[in-house]
Structures are given as C-alpha cells and as structure tokens.
Image: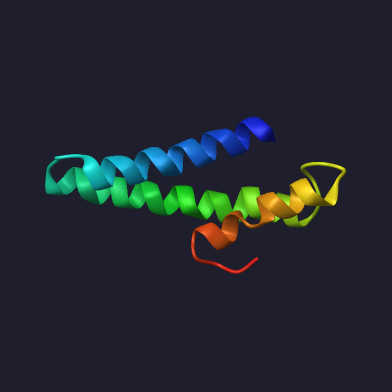
Amino acid sequence: MWIKTAVILAWAASSYLLLLLGDTAAWSRVLLAVSLGLALAGIGFCVMHDANHGAYARGRRANRALGFALDLIGGSS
C-alpha cells in the first residue's frame, strides 16, 4: 500500500511539474492535464479512502495525516 501511495503521489507531482514547466505542444498539454486529473482522482480514491478507513497504520496519527491528502488537492477530508 505504501508503494501504491508513492507511485500515485509521484505520478501527480510529475504530471503537474511537466504541465507547469514543460515547453510542449498543445496536444501534449492536454494529455498531461488528463494525466494530472487521473492522478488526483487516484489520490482521492486510493490514498485518502484507505487512510480514512484506518488501513495504513495501526496508529491514528499516520492514517489521519494521509487522510489529509484530499485536503491538499482541494477536497475536504
């Protein structure tokens, strides 16, 4: 589960940075925007959902900290 979280967060960060800093054609910016949207959905559906159900760690603090991942992308945990 931790590897899945790292992959999804890296996917979101790389899509965002490439969209923001990359000097690419319009069609590739559209693909990067779709990629970023899917990565943010992955954060909401996988990372935040699992954390709010207490699946990451036995302690409440780790689960609560990862549950705030939705707050970072504009939602409300």
